[in-house]
Length: 465
Image 1 (cartoon, rainbow, N blue to C red):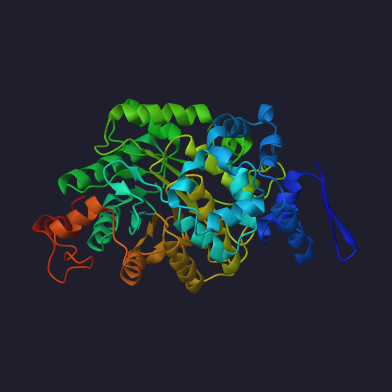
Image 2 (tube, helix red, strand yellow):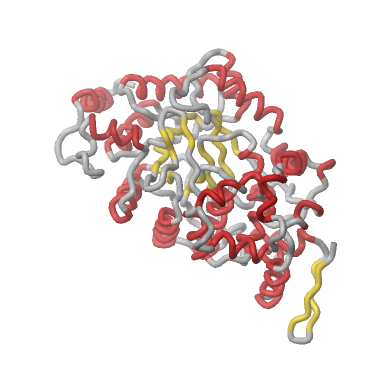
């Protein structure tokens, strides 16, 4: 299906739906690298104009990748809920935007149509939104998940405590872990990116995290972000696995480059459920995504980076995850050139994920060779918190020494909670108050924490793992 529009006497043509979506995307270096971006701001504006007038039903009739060629497309087609779609089935993309932002549209109205929205619809409407629109609409999408605590409640901001270490030294990991806990971090998950993915190493780290959580009765969950096949092997050996992690993408070919498919994710999901380690709920998958991953694998099928990203959320949604986060600036300026592009991408991803019903967090990050700095990240961090972001990362000093990029620190979460009146997950907040880390008023205590935590710190200083 081709699309045309005349503007100032010039005819603009868009050969198919994927071309229209790519040309309508706000500028980013990934799409320019792929050769699919708009050639000018005028062409981009015309594409957005055409997109705004496009009926939402077009996305049901014109799949970007034929379902017979791509299992992600098949999943999107099979999981589409036509009854949930009915209230918005007559809308154009522009009318959908107006409905999402209307004062008469209730939070419950948006929640009721989630399963009727395809990822491509979410991507399309985001492309005709200002940053302000993305923030306002995302804030109206509340998504709650549970494992050992409750994440995503209004007025709450959680953190992933990320005690990475370049050699997986257990003492270094444990020191960063306790440092984060003493700043009130870790309610979303205590999650380690392992330096090596061997089952023996991952098992050692999982036992370390499990020991800390059980010893101090912390209402949170752990995760070692190993490949799903490694985690699956450990589950079969009854190693204490809380969450199953995997990076995912928006096409079958891109997921294949990660060494996964939908059947493998389903197998891991069912295996983890069999361990019955959650005491409040069974949301136990943890997915990470990021614009540009499909392009990196040469598996984007001519689809723009942001739409590919939204399709990854269609994969995540099928497994009712506890956590999803976009690692927004992780590849570098080849895909998101500067702070402006990183900020826009982070807001798009957060909005699209929340609209589709996912518990969205964001790794607010950038590589040192990007045209970005910590002030850009402070801006995105604050905008995401205003938009109702479920969680952010907590990295010692905001400098991830294992992954070699800049992220957010324990202090960043304290800043957001203080200036916006946000609080941790309720069960974790109660624990922080009980052990003396918080003072009962959502602030760090000026006294000492519990003797058990102090003894643990002393053990670390003595060199005991």
